[in-house]
Amino acid sequence: MSSIEQIRQEITTATCANAEELEAYRLKFISRKSVIGELFAKIKEIPGPEKKAYGQQINELKTLAQEKFKQLVSSLEKEEAGTEAPPVDLTLPSSKAQPGSMHPITITRNRIIEIFEKIGFNVSDGPEIEDDWHNFTALNFPPNHPAREMQDTFFIEKNPDIALRTHTSSVQIRVMETRQPPIRTLCPGRVFRNEAISARAHCIFHQVEGFYVNENVSFVDLKQTLFHFAKEMFGKDTKVRFRPSYFPFTEPSAEIDISCNICKGEGCNICKYTGWVEIAGSGMIDPNVLQNCHIDAEKYTGFAFGMGIERIAMLKWEIDDLRLFTENDIRFLDQFKAY
Ligand code: PHE
Image (cartoon, rainbow, N blue to C red; front, top):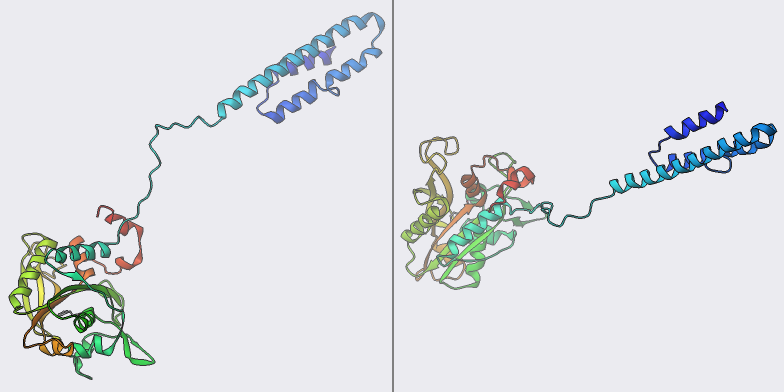
């Protein structure tokens, strides 16, 4: 009798949290080998007068166990229904796609092209691996002339006639060799110099060459063209200054400064407290260069300029380390999504 009471207690307090526990309950209280099954087996050992009362009790126990089992099954079903994935809510905002951004060098190059295209320049291309003629000799660098040392060149070891171009001026030669004036073109591209990588120098960088050859092209055209560019690129209040300089392929030559767009001329470390920053080299194409390309230097004149794309980008966005352009740091690149 005491064991019947104990089993009744166990059944009424039984709980189950998952299918395994439910099965354990079934084995213990419902199956043929359950504790209740054992009580039924014992019926023949019970003395005659008590048999009826005993039978009644274990039958009640069996019913209780079965009722409880039904309860446990249905409560478990309810619980499982609760953990099911909710139906898809089509009105929820979608998860955010991560769009890439254009590289600041590409953005700057495109902007430079856009500005010059509006005043009649088209775009030309040339190879990055050049021969001595296009990179130096045709540009009026005499053999063994110290001017060749102005740019530290990567030569191909087995053939000193072949080098990685040190400037996009080589494209000037290629275009002039194949076309007659009027020519007004822009040559953007990668250039290579044997320099140690630092915040201010890199062995691979980008230039845009521009030049115009026609009858009666003068220094005034050069000045006005670059003046226009500076204002479009850096804003209407930008001032432009031409400083006499030297390049073998231009005569006269000038370096072009713009008023520092960061401190507006007041002096900062970008302009080294001068109020001016250099953006390009330029000049009137040397008649020797025109002749080297079979263009009549008596009839035609031209101007040329070359600027560093990194330099323009650094001034535009106040970037103080050249290495950022090649490191592919997402935190840097992410900032150009708006362009
Ligand atoms: N090629 C020169 C350089 O790389 C720049 C330049 C281009 C100067 C055209 C004058 C005319 O420094």
